[in-house]
Image (tube, rainbow, N blue to C red; front, top):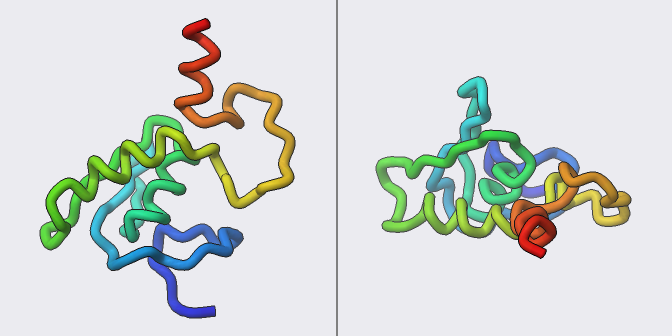
Length: 100
């Protein structure tokens, strides 16, 4: 397999989409730098995660990652996993359920 960014989960089969441009931090401030694609997937899998642009990031990179993560289910690479708990749905799906 080709080299992938540090934000790519070992079980996520997808390739990086562009250069490493952001840092994703979890609630304990542990972090990983990543491309926008893997950073969004990582952020979607974290509770109280945050994303910050690296100094060389193009304008809006962190915002794009934040917005993309909203519609991604946690650990989305587990495509056949049952999604029965609220914690297994995307933030957007949870908002939609609570707005009915």
